[in-house]
Image (cartoon, rainbow, N blue to C red; front, side, top):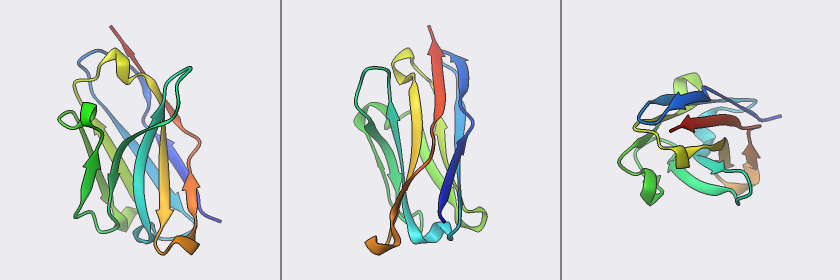
Length: 119
């Protein structure tokens, strides 16, 4: 049973930083393409960032490209999202997603971690 557990969310002032973690258990993280999504109250879930299995490729939503950094440590079965210069509009529940490669490995979501940025 694959499980994802996010941590690291919290309340921070605008301009501050947070680092989110996503621990993968049940199967080695190297089997998964890892992405972060977020969902603000009353809005649809949106893509934030993603990273290839080996970590050699990364992708970002335009509004976070110069402020957020996705990384992963497959030896620790953990992915990270370093968020800097946070803005109130970054307030949301942040979700980790693991998409198996090949696809029959499965697609999994964590329970989410709340990030609140005060102005």
